Length: 129
Ligand code: HEC
Image (tube, rainbow, N blue to C red; front, top):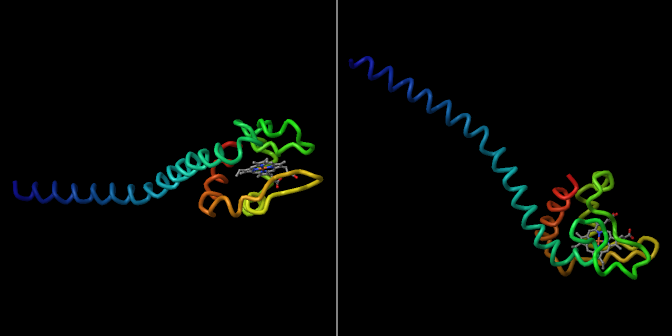
């Protein structure tokens, strides 16, 4: 009886060890994707407030402020276009703005903190999936 107890205890402990190991291994992955989702959701709020007027709800570049624009905003939901831009390039465009051929992407470096600019990039990545 006594021995049984020890065996049960040991296998229990071994199982717990395996579980802990699996958890330790899987948890960061789950956390990371949850964090990415959280960032995208928070970024959407930033996007709605600052970017929708030009880039539109879906990112297509058809927001209400674009009616009279000569150079329409980039289609941010275009996966091929967005995948060519690195996070650093997106950060530069958002921070400093972009005015190619009379385009009018305003700079957001002063309006948005770096954290918010990062969140909006997470949202753009999710948008163009
Ligand atoms: C006043 C209108 C306007 C607002 C507001 C605006 N954009 Fe833009 N955006 C543009 C225009 C116009 C372009 C195209 C610029 C060009 O290519 O010259 C552009 C281009 C971009 C690009 C593509 C840059 C590239 O390298 O091709 C990104 C990314 C972008 N905008 C993100 C954002 C984000 C994020 C916000 C909100 C924080 C935002 N924009 C707000 C008008 C706007």
